[in-house]
Structures are given as C-alpha cells and as structure tokens.
Length: 149
Image (cartoon, rainbow, N blue to C red; front, side, top):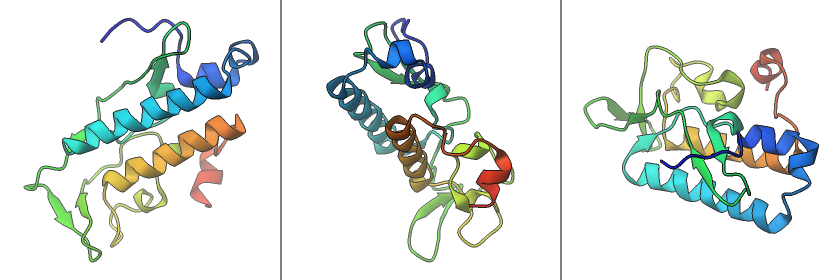
C-alpha cells in the first residue's frame, strides 16, 4: 500500500482547517472509495469488524482513501459460520472485538439468537461512518450512550 500522508478520516472531518478543503465532490468520492473497498473485502468473504473513521486514511490532497487496521478482520469460513433463522451467514465468536461505539446492536450480546458477526455488522459500521461525515459528530460519545440505544 502506498504512503498516505493526509492522516485519518476522523482527523479530516473534525479538523476545521482540513475540512474546509473538502468540497462535496471530494467527500462523495471518498465515500465511494470507502464503500467500494468494503464491497471488495466482502466479495472475498472477509468481515472487517472495526469500521470507524480512525481506520480510514487519506492522502495529502484527500483524493484517495484506504481502509486500514484489518488485524481483527475474519473470513466467513463455512467451518466456523452458521446461518441464523433469516438465512444470514454469521460467524460466531466467544469474545467481542472491535470498537464498541461503532458496533451494531446485535453484538452487545454475543449469545443472543441474532448474535455473531456478519457482513451486515460491517454495513452498520459503514452507516455510522457516513452519519459521522454528514453530521461531523461521533454517533456516540460515551459507551453508556451506545449501550442504551
């Protein structure tokens, strides 16, 4: 991967001086790159599990965006996956991973009947990232706020 010297996506959005350089066209292009990158890893059966603006980096002129920190990403290997009653393939874990405030509600209780990571877990994280871009505000500021939603 090439060197990306623009910092994290979170820094770009929350820094007024940097954000002023980000017009709507560039912002939409970065979101296209984000969703295309996410679609690419899902195509090969990988779940990122920690989507958040801190795990997205940009180059100096904000024309390229890359997903990073795939240390807890997993594949949906059928040996470890199961289908829930809706037919969705999920990977069941005994421990929670990722950043709590960026996780979907079903991961709060891993042993619930809908518990487990799936591609939809990443889709939820994607939605929170897009919400963050639009509002320029974190979706939750405290774990207690996250836990009560």
